[in-house]
Amino acid sequence: MITVTESTAPTAGPLERLSAEGVSIWLDDLSRRRIESGNLAELVRTGNVVGVTTNPSIFQAAIGSGEGYEEQLADLAARRVTVDEAVRMMTTADVRAAADVLRPVYDATAGRDGRVSIEVDPRLAHDTRATVAEAKQLAWLVDRPNVMVKIPATKAGLPAITEVIGLGISVNVTLIFSLERYGEVMDAYLAGLEKAAARGLDLSAIHSVASFFVSRVDSEIDKRLTVLGSEEALALRGRAALANARLAYAAYEEVFSGRRWLALAGAKATKQRPLWASTGVKDPAYKDTLYVDELVAPGTVNTMPEATLKAVADHGVISGDTVTGGYAQARADLAAVERLGISYDEVVRRLEDEGVAKFEAAWQDLLDAVTKSLDSKGVDAE
Image (cartoon, rainbow, N blue to C red; front, side, top):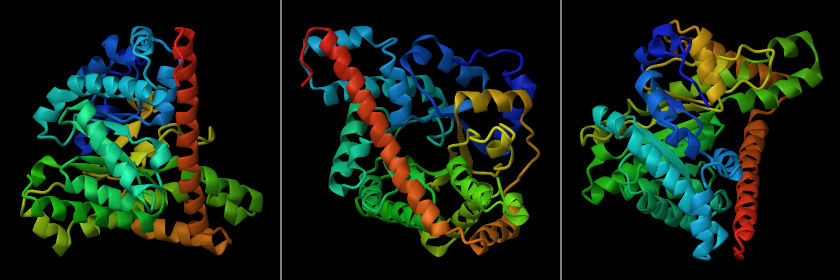
């Protein structure tokens, strides 16, 4: 849990400067203890945090510990609910409570921030119809205007994004690794807005972010560069992820200045903002604020795990836009990686597959932990 101290308060500077550059700071973590202790409210009040993201791994860590969930688990066991229903009730309760904490931010920013994200069951990642149904159910259960439903950017997820946006539900598109897939995600969003407009919905009330994963790209490409071991290969370590993200922002600028977008903007639609996810540094050789300091651009979101948020507050270096001036170098860096025989397409495809698999595994671990807890109450969860 983050304790707001002199080093993490906004008077320290970096978090305030990051916000002033047009970057929304969202916390990539949630637990019942964080909510009930007042810690989340304190971060919103004094720590420049204006949103929250969750994922199956975060819920597995929070609910798997059991801390803060004992009373609800006992009630769920008494009702003899299935383990899937138990997990859904606990996760939506946490998201609903967090959404209430962030509601003043939502109101003050006209819905731009103050958002809390909850992900569809990762086992549905390759099932369009089930993903749409789950998204509708989650939005109904949370029942807060500032909820965002997370849908993975799989092939099956793309039409689900269009349909869910078309129903007026705000969406956080997750697990984006490739520039090609990101283009498809933006297209799915625009198609969804067009559907919503055809239904007569208020486009200004529909918001979306596109979660572009960062550090995992470096982890996978750096591993291959290290195996090659040449001077040229080693010099490229730690550069691919930033290059990938910067070119994603270039694509965002292009799409959201085009004719198709301008027609929707005239109907008061909102841009789908790029969100930098997986911003915790995996390689200890790199500065722990690398994926924050080097991805500063207006109209973006950076969702940070606790450790990264504290590091930025303490010693982040925020020196203006570090994205839009680097497009040429970004293209050169990715081209150099390709020349060494490392296939960009193969890397991002592997990362997407692994991302879905990791969330499925975390979800199964959560189901197993909740099953054990329900069984300990003397009730069979099946």
